Length: 273
Image (cartoon, rainbow, N blue to C red; front, side, top):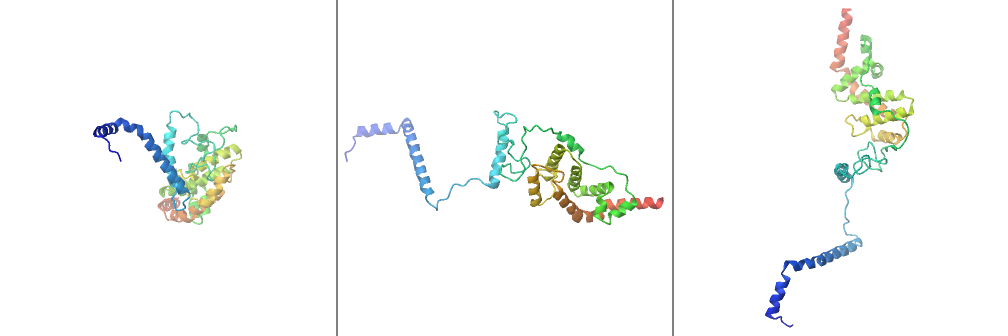
């Protein structure tokens, strides 16, 4: 092999060790690296032992979506009311935590629907918060101990039981039951749909702090029926919560200070009279 002269070696070294010369070769190196990666991927596709590139699934995907939602809402180019990653369009779930379009949760009705609606705050104010009732008599209070049905049939009994549930941080069970009773009295279709939506948001949605405990079968039925709700859409759920209060809370109520103090107070008044 012919040897380079000393002058040629010095010239070649000086030329190739300049930083500017390598910038000319960088695109070539990158192209070669890219082609090698493509070639490796093609080989892996035919190799059953190759490990495929995994995509985030389940909870990981949800965490990514939750992180992206605030960014999409704060984007300067986003028009108000325009559906995006952080807003719910007409095909997105309205109450479900998963925010996907394929789940069984009910979907938001088309906002272009021209049916008259009533403001939610007005209907929410119509839902019962505390029932007005005369003071219970001694006979009524004694009857509460005979059965749960006799307790729940009178407003005074419901108020006393609700006061006890509040001490156990389960007042939402009584509120849900009362809201269902009010819904059954409605006849106007638009009011029924709006009240059903309010009840769903307040007591069925897992995002609500007042969510009641229901099994998955009852929730599934409610989710399907919310597309066209009726007065009886929550009947199964109401019965389940009624049974829960009967079996779980009612026995403790009968032994609670709330009931015993009321019974003693009425007994003393009866003796004085």
